[in-house]
Image (cartoon, helix red, strand yellow):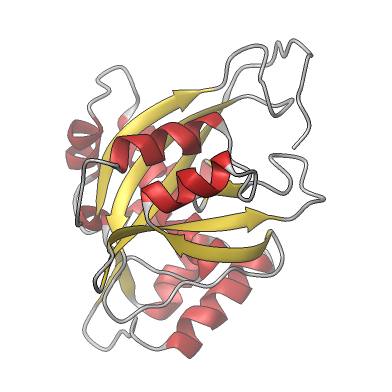
Length: 231
């Protein structure tokens, strides 16, 4: 990562990130980290949590029809009264969509006749998103509902006007979520070129040893997870 000295005057772009957690035998809580492609315009080469920008489609009724709860309930859970209800629900949708797109993990419930447990199907849906498919269409064809209750709001990070490690600004909501028992995340070899499960202490130790490049939100999120021994 290269340090940035520019002042960025554009408004921060709304985004969502999933801090994916699991309980590892004899090791305790671990977090999933993706290494962004070195050619990426944002945090190239850094290890990050799955996530990305909020799209207009994430806030649309077409995709909200596939939520497991009403958008108003998600608005209350996010705890930002000034935010439009559709935007609050959209941030949950964006988090789930990006987790599927970037590492093949889908937080969803199957409707009668639907299926979410097949790795081949999740890979197919992931490929469809990479090819430009609309998430609402993927959910409709798969006959599944988004599992928002698996995601818990954790923190909010707004890039300053002089970002330290990027020349773009983001307003990102971080959600924590436990990995579904029957799923295995894997980097997509497109936006991310490597992935690893580490305890928060292992990740920070490797960062201090210059082995794992991290940005400030990732560093402080890992610090906030240090007191927790399991999910």
